[in-house]
Length: 240
Image (cartoon, rainbow, N blue to C red; front, side, top):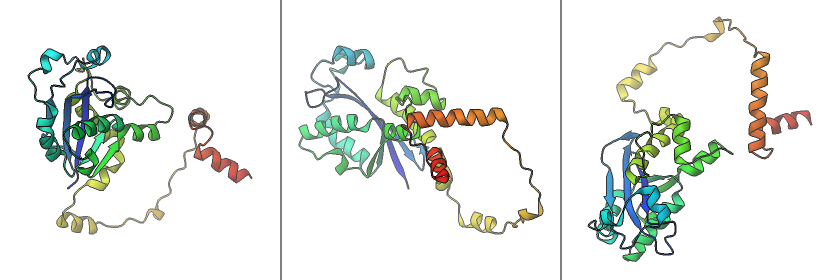
């Protein structure tokens, strides 16, 4: 069973080292790449004010958070929920850094001691779309993920959006995760092989317009990769 937890936090500011705190934790569980509904959503009383810029992003006021539990009282519950899972986080260094600081405050080990792996979707997106905007908003737009209900950044909502984005980022893995039982394997094994050599397949050449568009796309890739486009390098090698 492949258990993934898509995780996001909201904080009072940008620096855990300078005393900013986690005020919201949102987690969405995927098992075998399907939503289970076994999610985790918590608010915390940070015992300090949010910076003005942060408040404009998340909208979680001191008044709203005043009666919420302190992170330390919920730390073990958070650990037990996350234990053994692979975490999917956008810009993981930020969230992991904040959670590590919260655990440190109550004498607990860093986050990676409790989970199997941490996967950063920002790193994945930069590898897939070099030179492009790869914020969560940009990826939602790129993959057609609906974020129309997102007035403020909320940890649970952002985790839900990221889960959809992650499935799109890893869409090519779907075939590897289909569970086929023994009966289905036998049925597939009994399929008749077809000798394709009996068919004459037409060869359709690219049009001038298609070749031009292809060349334009390669030029954009070449520019974004700093002259390291594989197609270009192969062409240069074959000409040498």
